[in-house]
Image: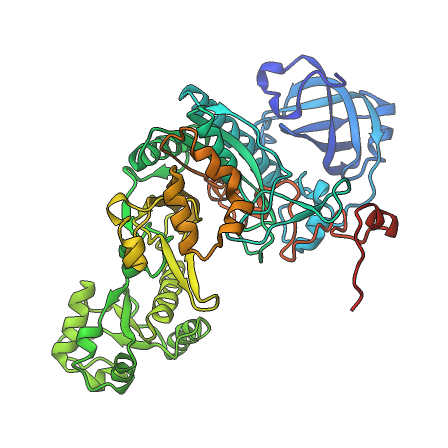
Length: 589
């Protein structure tokens, strides 16, 4: 190699040794007679000193060095003079006295400062992603990603799992989002699809008898993007035979506890993982991916509100809605402006408004519009429902149940942000269970799967498929951490008759079922074992462990929020010749 040591590994134990280093000029300081540079490679930084009395030629070259030049330096490791040590650096006790230096490649002035973690427009970062990845934070995120994946592979290998790759070019099947389609040159008018997940393939591997499969799988979904979504993403795909829900949940709990302990020991994990039913999560948090690092739970006040003379409450209830709220601890002192900000916050999420009720001392009347229409007893009942105390602030929303839950769920997180209630170093994983198997689509006028069409209904609910499908619960489970859904999974249907019944309930015709799923249904007739699995999102796991706000900051080369690759300028037009080869013609509108 061109270097004998990495920059970040030199310590006082190397003092007196002659070393050769290679890397990038991170910073440069010219102190008249002496030139100092911080030399950077993947392992860290070390200070290099160019002294004309040691090497006149080396010093002359050093005066030409600029940020991000690639250089090779040979010199002797020395202790830094007393008082000049840098405790922030692993190499801060030493420096290298340069004897020789060679510029391996100069650099243009970068479009943003690589040496500082400063705010940079994201599209600029993505256009020059190779420079963005040189920055310490991004480098550490990618290394963390590597360690997470390596740990998962080693953990599952020790548990008897086999890693098996599945095809990228497959058939278009319904998985909950739009497929990316790939036209076939050899078969005109026909298309492959990129897999939204290897769902049917992993089930077929269970039919094949592998029993314990996993894959660090690339998946593709053509859907609207947000902070935790990308058109292409990576998941830990996992499937097991001869198991029930408890086997999957226990394995995931063991995996994630061990993962954090080994890869991110600075973070704490609450154990055991709480388990909530879907209905309980919606009632208490207004969402099925709750952040459990703090309380501030939603409470239903409809029964108390119904006894009041407050028109806002009564109108909502008469229209079949709900009156619910949260308690913001110690916020009774909020100013009018602060309360208006919270009202605007929920209105932006569909609520008609926000009723605020500060809890005053016992002998004082609460200063609130709502308080004029509530008796002291009714106010006391509401406070008791939250176990609230003097000085707390009740925040209440009335209206359609789904709107109330959505607004309060978001408001709960906003209150926690303002009051800094969520410990950033605490990880609270939880399982959400007992999902409905189906949900009614008003737009489509038919039943749709809550998860996917291969999810098994609970055994005791199977008879309800014919009489009351809305009451059928699924063998489905989600893993959530700090308000982020990390994975979904389920026990799968493994018998043809039951799978065909679910397909019929979802509105698939016999011909469509045969065309889309015939291969899977036929496989079920050759001794398919009971099986199930789960698929944690690798990008989301790393995002949480890295403390980032978006998965784009833990993916080496992501797309932006518009699904554009800024570096390659993709998607991009293709030539007429390429289209002809694929038997395609663009329609101009």
